[in-house]
Length: 237
Image (cartoon, rainbow, N blue to C red; front, side, top):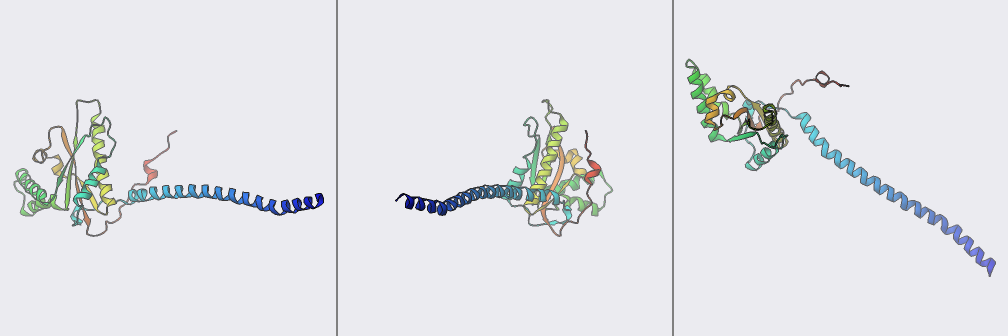
């Protein structure tokens, strides 16, 4: 019986041992493959999350306000744009910016004000120029007037507060672009006129830093020459 038992054990081991080893190898490979697959999925998911954002930033282009038309952002979309707009660096948590939203009725009222002020400051102006001032704030479906709300009582430099307001304007343009709209950030003479500032309800601590026009492009904005990175960047060691 012993020789027979030995043979049975020998052939059993010879047959099943390779299968067992192969099974262990296969399980180990599958485990590693699963880990690799999980890593790849996370990597590509991260890549997919980053690329659209970079693509948006690299391709954003301001459009001329005069070349905008309906539709503009809906109320819900505008809320999202403005919420994204104020997600900016804000040293001291001051929220040193204020935003006025003007739809058509407000734009028409502001246009009449531009005409009155321009005519007062330029008595010899002609009807064509007055008409231009009338339509100046009405060139897009939505007009946002952004002002820096400078707080002099705190230790935060005024320059940093102004820069935070500039970041708000840039975020608004980028957010609008992400929703398929176009925008243009202008100042022009109304941004520096005290009568315009007062009429819009801004106080002594506030400075208008931009009129932001939002709408739909009548035609795709033309490419423009951009600064070369090599001309504005250098490695300092």
